[in-house]
Length: 128
Image (tube, helix red, strand yellow):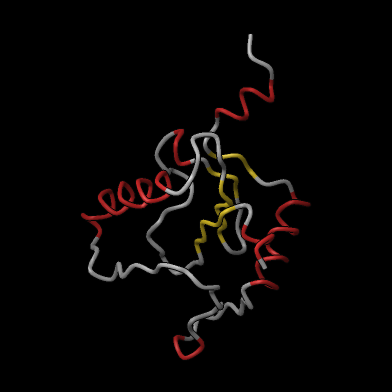
């Protein structure tokens, strides 16, 4: 029978503890100069270190969301190891450690619906 830690490692969505949630978000605010806003005149709401990639997804409609999800998972798989977890952050909501190799997303969408959804390498804070 698998241990609890082995079962957790097989889950592609692992909730962040309250302590880790605060730690990760505090580092994100600090390292990315995060200033959330609902006003487009204040965007972008954070600074990105170089190099970085952004993708324009404004042409996606509701019928295209599954395609977007597949493409995003494929991109994350390409830049992570099979046993590597990312931080999947949803501003002011529950956030997770996420492994794209263990299954499709189902908890935090890649298509923003007015929230800040961030998928960040767990080592990002050590590069600044």
